[in-house]
Amino acid sequence: SLNETVKLPEHIKPVAQAIRFIEERLDQPLDVKQVSGHIGFSEYYFHRMFLSVLGESVAEYVRKRRLSQAAKSLIAGEQKLIEVALACGYDSQEAFT
Image (cartoon, rainbow, N blue to C red; front, side, top):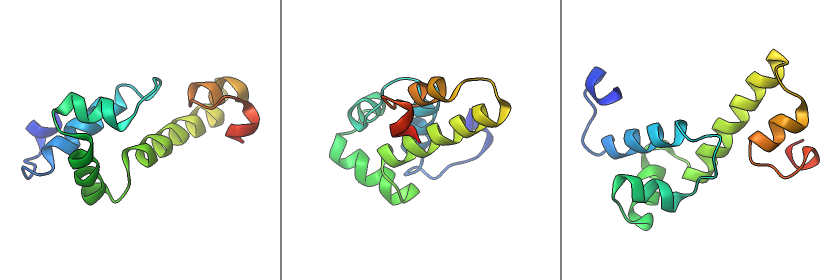
């Protein structure tokens, strides 16, 4: 666990928890309400906390991580472009491109 291997400051622990939750669900629909609810904070407070620690919103973080995963899949040639686009939450290959 991240908290066990590295001593995190208290204000960062909920964000680390949220990141673990997000990383385990990158292939599923995610929003700030689900993530904040999982770690027991209000959406408003959690959004501000996440933004202050990472410098980006939950939605931005999720989008970047999904695109990073998509790039790995495309480079590996494991999936067709449309399959990668749909897995990243895009409705079409054009929107993904």
